Length: 409
Image (cartoon, rainbow, N blue to C red):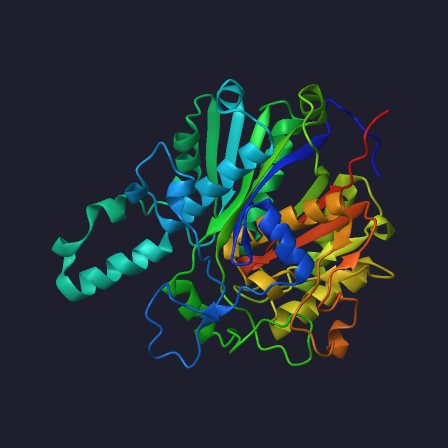
């Protein structure tokens, strides 16, 4: 693993998470350690006409606990998640609001759907009552850019770049990679990066029509897996240089070693094994590591036949002996643009707390996915390097590599 360079090394000092298995770092960590399931019947929209409609929705979420400066009515559900996770992450990093406002800051948030839940509602109103019935407040909060700009407004930031990255289910890792480059290049002092999405009828219906929604639970790598469950939430990471973190005595979860991105445009929905293998190799080269140094992989692991076999095939191309490979989507569903950001938060916690989260709902491994998926129970492990895979429609791949932080003497 790379030698430490205080000025150019990028570290994670704060985590904010909103998920179906826990809100906040402590609850999320407890959910990962116990293999908690967020599965329940979907309530975000009318599910009449669907043969089955389980999902992983966030419950017990009160935006008023986190949103203080801006009008909640002007913020859609995905943006509420984004703002809440950012608030949590900043507090977790030990950064005071005034201190953050005085630093060059980047906010980058990845998403698949933006505020498509609002678009679903607006479309329904228009179909039933005509365009004059549209709720103008709801219409104004639809643009996906609000996932990032709402964070800026809520935190009262001024010297800031705000960007929303729409690379679908790999968007969280893209946003984190964007922040990594900005800090390492000296363009910003602090980066708040991650992803956010909310359950919506449009996306559920699309996956349902593709035949990739699981009837009950998500079972990545299992012989009897049936597909994904749509989920929601947000994960935001606070990143800064190692020099900055040490100067203010911050707690450090992990080092960001590097990442790899590519887009093969092979197929609108089918992943490409060779392309994903190349993306992992790019990430390793950028991070300055060898495959054998990776101690566990957080897989994209959606639970579909195509994704899991393709991803495992790509892993076997790159690794002579694949390390434990898990999918936390088995617990919290596929939260779309938030998925890889939440997995990155899980990886940072795994490094800091010395464990590997489980792949739950696992009965029998598919021979085509033969690897150690840490079935059903978390495992204690001293980890040095972890890898987080993210795959997206249209061939967008993003692989992030994190490393354990050791105190300098």
